[in-house]
Amino acid sequence: MKKSTVKEIKERFDKDVERFSNLETGQVATIDAKISLEVLTEGAKRIQPNAQRVLDIGCGAGNYTLKMLSKIPNLQCTLVDLSRPMLDSALGRVSLHTNQSVRIIQGDIRDVLLEENHFDIILAGAVLHHLRDDKDWETVFKKLFSLLTENGCLMISDLITQETYAINEYTWQRYGEYLESINGKEYRDKVLDYIKKEDSPRSMTYQLDLMKKVGFGTTEILHKNMCFGAFAGIK
Ligand SMILES: C[S@@+](CC[C@H](N)C(=O)[O-])C[C@H]1O[C@@H](n2cnc3c(N)ncnc32)[C@H](O)[C@@H]1O
Image (cartoon, rainbow, N blue to C red; front, side):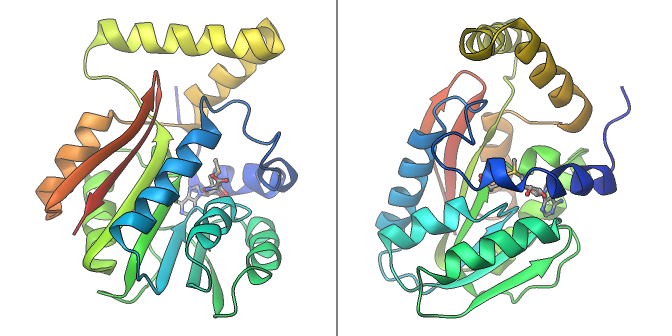
């Protein structure tokens, strides 16, 4: 199936701001969304307790940065997203929770120009699964590595695949069952069809290996449940 273009992805998220602005109900399609949000931001705080700058890529309405600010107040925040309506919502919400600057940048994470050796924490919540081929993944991981300060951390929470066909089938079957249990068969089909069209996730193993390949000294697994995981790289 032909995957969604960046323009199509942008247009879809332009219309989905409300769902991503609600931490309680917005993320039901993500298994353990709240656990991942918690462990990823608490993990970032423990790796970088004196952090000053956070970059949130694919920030949506700012959920990850908001949670990060509840752990480390008054960070300088840079928020990147394809969608202007998402950024507007994120700016409004995040500005209420820091007395430092909040900068929003509309663009594709592949293209936006950002300062190197600048960010202590990079948050990537449910965004990297939009990357496509190996070159795409490698270029973006290299870029994120270059943006981090020494000992800075890249914190990823995302949809993931498995390395083997058998286990991949199993985890996605379980995900289908999970979706059906919360909202019925039609909802399951809708979410799975949409993932087929829009997303191209990679395994956690692939991403941890890629982190090491582009220079990260240490990697950490914080949480995994079927086809969702939270993990990190430390520069
Ligand atoms: C599933 S939402 C997650 C939003 C937020 N991180 C959260 O967890 O609540 C993915 C977001 O990533 C953005 N996005 C997708 N591909 C992107 C890209 N290549 N560059 C920047 N943002 C992107 C979308 O516009 C959308 O707002």
